[in-house]
Image (cartoon, rainbow, N blue to C red):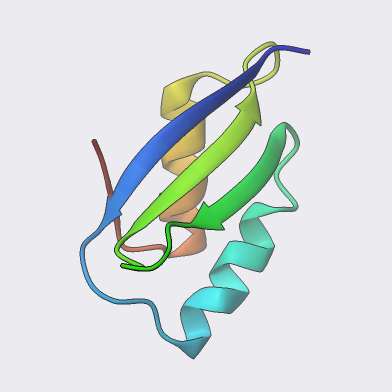
Length: 72
């Protein structure tokens, strides 16, 4: 397993519904961790297994889940 981390800026602040979206992303095979950057709460860090996913796959999973992100 090769762990890699991608950083994303949030287009808007997260709401309660977005927390459910983050929970859905955890169900994607190969995504290990989704963490909200603190204390600003304006970005996400996503840790994933690079032997299973490509960066574009991670982007697509986050967008499919409905998260308002833009990769840095």
